[in-house]
Length: 290
Figure 1: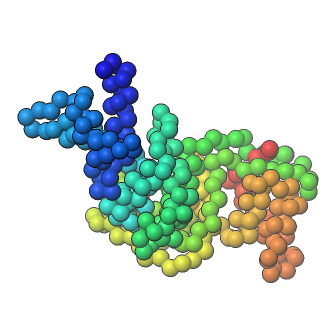
Figure 2: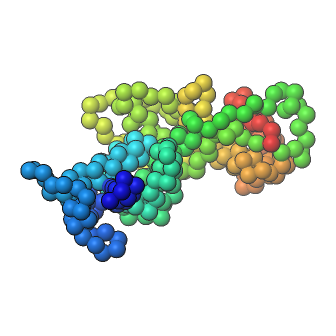
Figure 3: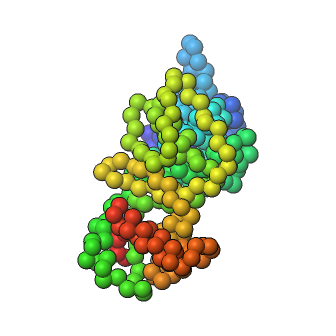
């Protein structure tokens, strides 16, 4: 066996997915015995068979990639428990294996994938999906670039037909639960944190973390970065609609119409709200030009 053949053989065997109980598979995809394959290029020793020696590397590879995804979703781990969360991530990675030299994007598809496989989340299905969505939004908000914000002069020159854009780091979430409380509670129990929320209330730290019980409550969040920290800001439904319309490329007239389409406020109050939304977004530097 040449060095190149050895490297390819080892890479294929090490990256082969684990069984549901985190062991190495006995049979490969072609129906061949993995034990026979291992004995063909790995020497047994006084303590371990060829299969067992290969299994160490196979398991360590998967424990590393499972751990990489788990590190991005600490609150999901807290909600589900480590055993269930590890099994869920293993199932996810079987369908979404690593295809890049970097582990940064390995968990990118987990929230949408979990939405399609809610049975793996146990009794907290919808809560788990919301937590996963918020945790990935945090990563996107932290890593995404920032563009020069709209300055007062540019803002004053806007027309009804003008089109704006949002900062790439700004993430908008429509959630079924107020999971910013859960995520913040988990992060407070970690050694360091760089996220902040305007949610009311502070929970006491405890050695053993307990997930707070939440009732279903539609929650709209703007997740954004400011001075290298990520903030979770609760916004009302109309503000969410307005920002979403900007994000989707609507002109200002369409943005305003979308935001207030279902509003029951009098026209004058609607106008006040719209001014507040734009002023707030401008103050935080969320608005930029296309």
